[in-house]
Length: 575
Ligand code: SRM
Ligand code: SF4
Image 1 (spheres, helix red, strand yellow):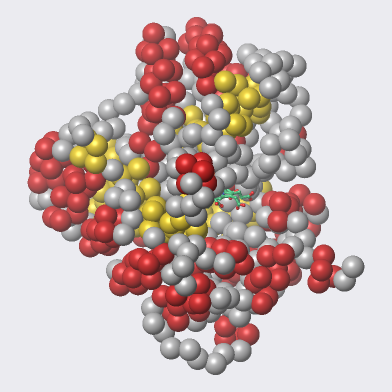
Image 2: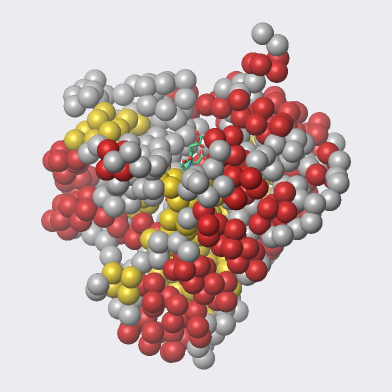
């Protein structure tokens, strides 16, 4: 077998695609189907959208021999999660006009529309670009939306980390003209590999690549789930000294395949603010040249590093850089949640972090969240900041504007949005059913019910205000970063979840499987005695994730390789 034939099929698709063009243009003009050709389905991800079908009605359409109800999910990149009010209003309009009338605020500070049909795709992408946001590289084997902390305690650092996230974002955006040609009526120009993709080359990266910037003590961007992170380090005057660099984090795994695992990132050194973009580029290049292009299951940077070693990676990176990273500096993370409610920064500006359950912006009968946010955007001259926990912050509100915004919050019953149990405020649920083609079970539509059940237990035990991170995903790909939560449910099949316990409260320790394929009807009775025990026997301030380890319910996961080891003996009780 030649080297070429051993490569994963997607490598061939990328190579033949002429820098992400493929036959997308032809497919778009074929109105005999609502979908696109199968090779192009891999390429459209680089343009920021996925073909999906409504799984709630899939079986019915199959029975009537109808094509699946194809539509497209579009992901909009928002570097650092910061959008202007004008951009927010446009996102809302487009979600209503071309999407299903809701927006999903994602775990990577992006907007997502669901339900856009093929004939509306081009105009939707064009109109997104008219707002100075875009969709290119929102998905695909390239660097994705760069995250950063939306509301650091050291507020003057925010401008700098936001700037860095924008700079890295644009530096690592694919250079191909295909996006402009296909969606923005760009003219075809003859180009060479050097001008088409100077960083990526024609086969791009082996797999997706993710970057985040954290500002301690908050780890809200969950650096341990990212391929590369920059951890802002302040000097003794609170000014930015530079960044610790961490690499090799990731969540995705496959049920029943112990060779796959989530992995915590390793902190490998420190760089100056001026070096950060160069470091990002060179980390990407080391992965481009060494990542696994044969088996996509093992193609993320976490496996490249795990298969060789952290020391190997650092030495290689230093070679690509032409200088050495400095030794890492001290830092402490306290939590990975959001700071809800009003905060005021050192310049006197106000910020309001609102809780958005499941990240879904929607109007319901008794809660007109979507309309309320639009009314705020109409008068707000600051910004809207999406958080990595699927919430939204109304940022940079002046003292003069605050009363007007408070009046709108009152009118739309939003002022109390974050007056909830600390568990509810620390939840994340991925999209899952009905749109995600990979979901094995519900997540966004079901986690609120589980939390309501557990809130009763917390209330009875005086724990309403004790934060516990709780996350649910419809499958082990890990889009809600479940393996970093103190309690996590990962879809195993309809109404069945693997239950994981013992993640670090700051997202700094992986959890471990406690019960396999637990029926949803058993969730409360499984967790209730453990929560009671925590209430009665915890040490002062001890977090749930630490307690379950000390009390012997689960052993600690020290690194990705022991994620599958030392599970409780009765882990498979329900499997
Ligand atoms: Fe994800 C695939 C949704 C964050 C790991 N993810 C998908 C797809 C596109 C399903 C598919 O491939 O057909 C989901 C679309 C569902 C839908 O209907 O919208 C999807 N992922 C999401 C979002 C929207 C979840 C959410 O509810 O917020 C998040 C969008 C982020 C963004 O704006 O870019 C999202 N996905 C994540 C994260 C969390 C993060 O990055 O912080 C992870 C885990 C971190 C990581 O990458 O290791 C994640 N998604 C995956 C994976 C597994 C990757 C792996 O290395 O194994 C897949 C499947 C794949 O790539 O093959 C996946
Ligand atoms: Fe879909 Fe699985 Fe990601 Fe949830 S975790 S959005 S079910 S791929």
